[in-house]
Image (cartoon, rainbow, N blue to C red):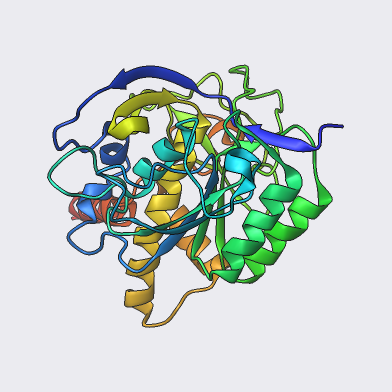
Length: 322
């Protein structure tokens, strides 16, 4: 049995030297910009368990608050959490790239990022690294843990660490995995994405079509864009990547916005189950099997949209009865 996990397989579609103040299409599709007048995720901290991060990237330098290396990269120096692969930097940009009139904007452009390097330059990580990374995130009292990593095997100690995080009211978001065959009747499981305690995120393309590579199983919670996703990359550059690795950070960023909105509305700190309910409240079914899409597409303005439809239907019904 393998004693390590890896980045969820992904594809680099295109590297781009420079981007001029762009809101990526995936960020637009989930309606994040429609929420920014109310919140941009300020004071919410997202721990990214990944390959590290290029913390001095122009779009990320104001977002990264700290980090720690748990891998064998850079002589295992815990203070060097540099990204040698690009995956973690891309994930970070989707979650919280600054809305700074240059480059790209993330879903929650004022959220804080805690970089927890648990995968090395080869994209691999021992389960102990990941477990220690989760425990570190818990100690740092983060709000959200984002993991675009996985393996084929259930690991009891990893599962226990995730349960501990959730019991500490931390939302744990995971990529569903890229072993899909496009057939909703077959199951593909990757861990930790298949644990019931996590929020498992599948992928669609930018035209709202289910991605053939996206895992299907009864633990999928929702879907977000995961194909041709533009975000930050190495050497201060940008890239378009595809995979459920790119879908999960859309949800992590969205939860930063939702947590601010919900806590303000209810005038208290909501629990992890309550925040999960607020997330699912903001989904719209796309018509695919629940094994592929779970509750549907993350759509942050869904409550307002559905209320408008209900009001229109009610008005139409009343007019017909007159």
